[in-house]
Length: 302
Image (cartoon, rainbow, N blue to C red):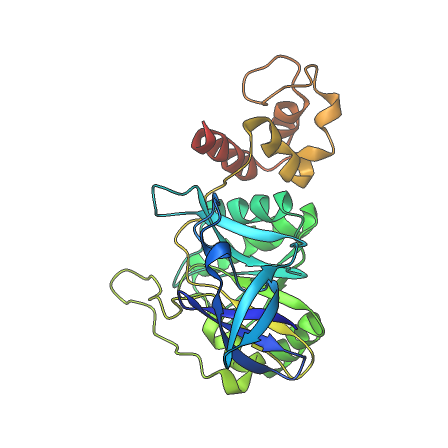
């Protein structure tokens, strides 16, 4: 019997059976749990698994091969990374121009990670109703930057019925992952897309203009239009893992198209002579802020 993991709470897992949203509880077999893995979690939301039913209890006996996954750095020193979710058709990175402000560095690290694991991404720029000098400036910068480097960017409000209708069409019949800093509106969007989910929503801290964590585990919800929505915990930072420094530029689409024009095939685009990437930054072909994000990832990896 096959199923799809919809929630992990330790040694027990919620598993979806069929497309109607029916869930069962299942344990992980010991021999899988003790495998030598570099990740902190052997089974993740989105995994397709093979189940046994013995002594009136479901057990996960096998994890099917993953099409892809998305990862972040683990807080546990003994492990290298944490897999957030697997088998994702598309990811929506939710950003906010203010209250809280989503830093471009966070956006670029997530996009590079998604590129590395072959996951397409769209940006949902929430809170289109915010009208302040700071919000308008950041919103304009993001809307001018990302659509020009192949990332669809939607200026929306999760309280606007027409915007929610557009998003419902975008997620129909797909397994989609929602990611973003705390407070950007993930839980609000989940409630709009899957009304029976009853996700807890908290106000943004007035003192620090940061979101409060309302999601503690990754979890999958099944919508009426055939979508499967994976909600992720609010993440302060995405760390790039399992990537070599010479690979990073391949995960920036605007750099990838120019790499063959550098003099050296192993160019890191920092101080090498006749570097086409640095020339493009100087001429304005590549955004300075994106290049700064690229350098930040290099520094992090080294």
